Every structure is written in structure tokens, then in C-alpha cells.
Length: 160
Image 1: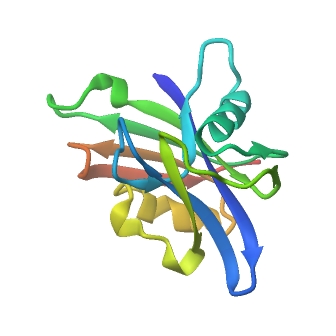
Image 2 (image 1 turned 135 degrees about the vertical axis):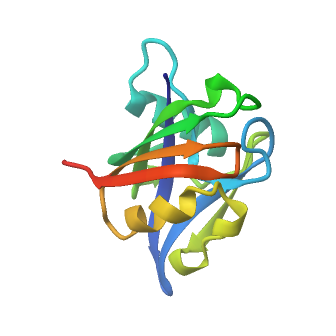
């Protein structure tokens, strides 16, 4: 199963905590808000892949990553590409160098936790992301019958 990463930059703001989301401008997930991430290359650790993707997609270098979730996604219908099945390692970052900038792939924007646009994100995000932003560490399994319809979900606490 393909391994991938997803990272959310978070910061404290005057009106409460904020999370950086980015609009995917091309490829799989185009038109959706999400964290920053992508595929893990052969010989690369998931942490190194997360750092590389963040730098490539929004131009910042993270100082530290906190692993907060491991999510497994299955797509089961014939119209779904089996390459969509993936194990996604999710990180939060609270320290980085540089300012997030738009790239050919992503358009970043800060959101207050209460204003996260879940209706413009993947269907599973509204299930697990609020929990992660509130400090939970989780493992999740999501099975989709197509790119929008979840037919099974399971979330359990994550150790460490």
C-alpha cells in the first residue's frame, strides 16, 4: 500500500488557534482544501517526505513535526483506482521558517479552528480532523465506495 504524508501548520492567533489549509490546484484532490503532503518516495522516511512536500508545496521549512494520526484509506468500487488506497501519516507543525506561499500545486490560507471549510474538504476530514486539532492522537480506517462516499469508518486512540 502506498504511503503518504499530510501536515497541518497550526498557530496561536488573537482570536484563537488557526490551521493552515491549502487548496489543491491540480491532480488527485483538485478543488479541495487539505493539509500539505504527498507520496513517500523509495528510501525516504515519512518525516523526510513530509518536510520535502511542505517545502515544495508552500515554501516553508518545518522545524519539528508531531505525528498525530495514521489513517488508512481504501477505495473499493471498480471505478476507483487501486493506487488511491493509501496509508497516510498525519503531522502537526507549530514551528517553521518562512511564510507559506502559493505554488503551482497549492494555495495556502489560514483558518480559525471554528471556520475550517469541511464542506470543501474530503468527506473523512470532518470526522477525524477536529479530534486531531483538539489534541487527540488517532488511528483511522476509512473505506470509500467512490471519492465522496464513506461506507465504513473506524477510529481508535493512538499510543504515543
